[in-house]
Length: 95
Image (cartoon, rainbow, N blue to C red; front, side, top):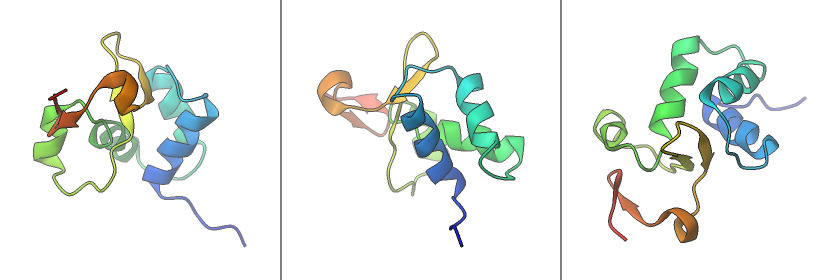
């Protein structure tokens, strides 16, 4: 029996299936939706809570263990890479 993915795991799997991005929120949302039966709101909240460079996400979801999405200026997502995107603390770039 295959283990059910959490929404967080589905988001990570989806962006990796897109080669790490860049990908639009709509493309990512569509792929995640097909992996489970979460509400639209749950998926959208995960797309916000998992972003390293979104300061409000740190206020709303302070205990998120690993944030792995980077939100680009053009609104697309990609897998966060500190060597490429810089170092962030509480959603703000520090280096």
